[in-house]
Length: 171
Image 1 (tube, rainbow, N blue to C red):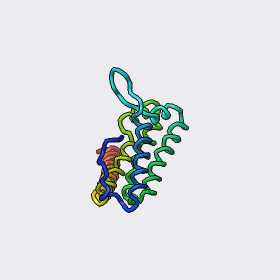
Image 2: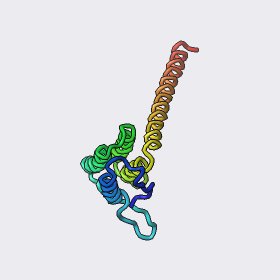
Image 3: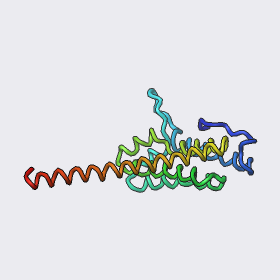
Image 4: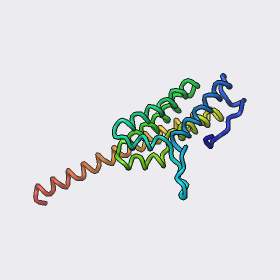
């Protein structure tokens, strides 16, 4: 089982048996994708995701499709949009980094987007309001960070333009 918050029957949304059954399937699936195998001696765990990533182009698309199934199951379980969007962001980041040859597979060892997404669902099942609020805050901070990155890029462009103009004018 994936480590995380163990859901209690009282905290689970309306269809408790179905939600818990889905969560169990997702935990096993994420384990297969992210940490099923172990490298002897050093003890590093990995799953099918980094192995699929070694297949140029197609492997990452297949791994993304597997990760998308986890998100679809989360939607079927009734997870809120903010949580599903956060899960999608994890999967897109995994896909984007995975498309970098060799280094992408190494990132898969660390990122483990599938296990991370199942953990988000576990947290939501255990404490729905808190998990939803955390996902909403995640996007607030992500938006602020991207906004600051855009402002910094524009500022750097203006500074470079002023330097070029100064050089052209002979100053």
